[in-house]
Structures are given as structure tokens and as C-alpha cells.
Length: 166
Ligand code: HEM
Ligand code: HEM
Image (cartoon, rainbow, N blue to C red; front, side, top):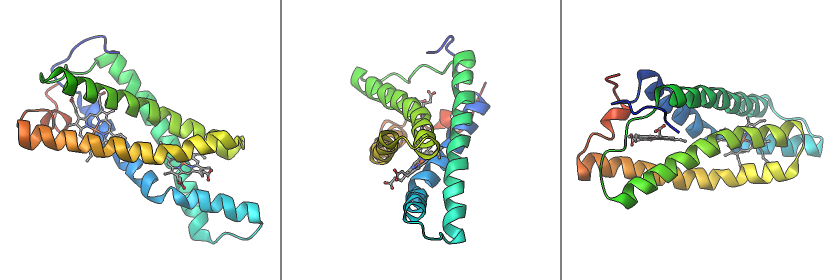
């Protein structure tokens, strides 16, 4: 995917990584509110205002993720990404696969959410719900990987997602 091999992530790439990660945590923790809002609307009862606010926050946060991801992909295509810090082939491959899946999910989650909510495409909603456990497993592996790099391998992997020299 990268056109060049810079020495580090740019400041913009680092900020995008952490802002998107934060919004994803919000979506995973509070995502059930929009599901509940959907049920309430289908039953024809009146939702309380807190639920309406949380459901709308889910939609706008999801749209924000989509827009930020498009910027992130554009940056990755123009700036590139640093080469993985050398390690066993399998470790590098697993990290690459997890990052690739994140990119895919972070585009697919908002699109399936929008299709389920506005176009009433039920299978899109089912796929969307399935993304929750997939995200949780990938994030857990990703965090364990980051901690492994920091505390066991003691290499610069974590540092380069914290500060930039580019
Ligand atoms: C990356 C962005 C997003 C993430 C991580 C995310 C995550 C989630 C989660 C965790 C749930 C709860 C699933 C459950 O109850 O088991 C959910 C439900 C839902 N989300 Fe999202 N969401 C995102 C974007 C969006 C967007 C942009 C929309 C647009 C309207 C949306 C619409 C929905 C709907 C309609 C449900 C209820 C699904 C159902 O009951 O069938 N989501 N989402
Ligand atoms: C506490 C949580 C997190 C930590 C400690 C963390 C740490 C890191 C680190 C250290 C890297 C750099 C890896 C390298 O340079 O080889 C990285 C890359 C990445 N992270 Fe995270 N991350 C976290 C949460 C997340 C979340 C929630 C997502 C997505 C939902 C995510 C998606 C990514 C992606 C896609 C990359 C690859 C970036 C690229 O090369 O373009 N991260 N993360």
C-alpha cells in the first residue's frame, strides 16, 4: 500500500491513530444504545431523550470515523508507513494482517451501519453487529502485541506511534 518508506509515522498519522481508536472505544462501549433505539421505534413507543442523544452520537461518531479513515488512507498512500521493526517473520505477518483487517473494518463498519439504519438493509445490520466481537478480539491482540513490543522485546514500536520524527 505504501509508496515510500519513511523513517516514522507523521504527526498527522499518529493523531489520526489515537483519535480514531478513542472513537472506536466509544462506539463499542455505547453501541447498544442505537440498537435499543431501533427496537423502541419499531415498537412504536416514545424513546427517552438520553437514548435519542446516544443513538445520534453513535451515527455521527461512525460518520466521523469514516471521514477520518479516508484522510488516513490518503495519508498512507502519500506519506507511506515505516517498515516494521525487524522480528520473526510470523510476528511481522500477524501484525500486518491485524492492521489490514482494522483498515477494512473501519471502512466497513460505518458503511454497514449506514446501510442498516437509512436503507433498512437487515443483513447489513447483522454484519454490523458481528463486527463488535471481531473488533474486540483484534483490539485485544493488537494491545497485547504493543505491550509485548514495549515490555518484552523493548523495541521502538510503541514509541513510533507516540512521537514522530517526520
Ligand atoms: C466504525 C464505526 C462504527 C462502529 C465501531 C459501530 C459499532 C456498533 C456496535 C458495537 C453496535 C452494537 C451491536 C450490538 O448491539 O450488539 C452497533 C449497532 C448499530 N449501529 Fe453502529 N457502529 C459504527 C458506525 C455506525 C454508523 C455510521 C451507523 C449509521 C447509522 C451505525 C448504525 C448502527 C445500527 C443501526 C445499529 C443497530 C444494529 C441492529 O440492531 O441491527 N453504526 N454499532
Ligand atoms: C490502547 C490501544 C492501542 C495501542 C496501545 C496501539 C498501539 C499501536 C502501535 C504501537 C502501532 C504501531 C505499529 C507499528 O508501527 O508497527 C499501531 C498501529 C496501528 N493501530 Fe493501534 N493501538 C491501539 C488501539 C488501536 C485501535 C483501537 C485501532 C483500530 C480500531 C488501531 C489500529 C491500528 C492500525 C490500523 C495500525 C497500523 C497503522 C499503519 O501502519 O498504517 N489501534 N497501534
